[in-house]
Image 1 (cartoon, protein in one colour):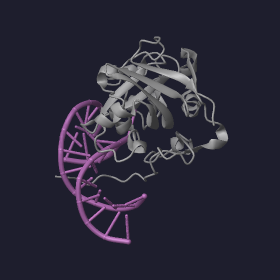
Image 2 (cartoon, helix red, strand yellow; image 1 turned 90 degrees about the horizontal axis):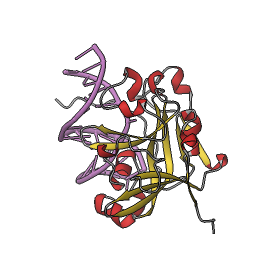
Image 3 (cartoon, chains in turn yellow, red, brown; image 1 turned 90 degrees about the vertical axis):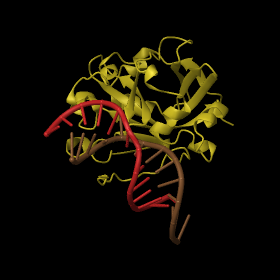
Image 4 (cartoon, chains in turn green, brown, orange; image 1 turned 180 degrees about the vertical axis):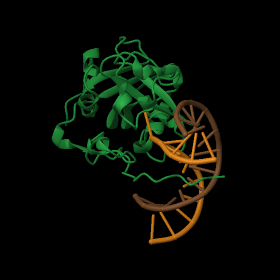
Length: 213
DNA sequence: CAGCGGATATTCT
DNA sequence: GAATATCCGCTGA
């Protein structure tokens, strides 16, 4: 049996590093989400890095707007964005203030509060599907834009915080380039996941959407 | 599991 | 109008 995960909160210095350093270091960590109905905990299994203003795939590439302001703030805070008119996604802001880099939490395993997550994820057909995908993860944890800007280092009463957990050894993780991004940026491994973990969604090549009108 | 279309907000053109 | 860091329900294997 494995040892119990370390429940020590991670300090702000954990986030205040280059995003490509923080992203793989998040795998196996424990995200705590405290709701009025009770706590949920998530073991992070898949993430993707976004390098701020220099990254064509990032929301920050076109500069600061009302919606992405949190990305330009201090590290250790949440950036929650609304996508495709229906879904939310949860990012953790990294690097120095103004760098506008962050890590998207793409998938994880719900280890505490699976009953609460199941109520919100009615269509999930198995526990491993509760947080298999960025928008599913946000839905399972009851994350919406009211949590945008939340400080994960604000102490045990914060609605979001990050515990040490069980960091994943380098030989147990995989990485790969993002799809849909050309140029020099495509050469970097932006996506990281725990190898063979059943909560990681299968790789899907990006395909342009057909027009609907 | 793979492939498809539909639903919708935000931003740039 | 077009693109996008998506998911769901359906079909078929």
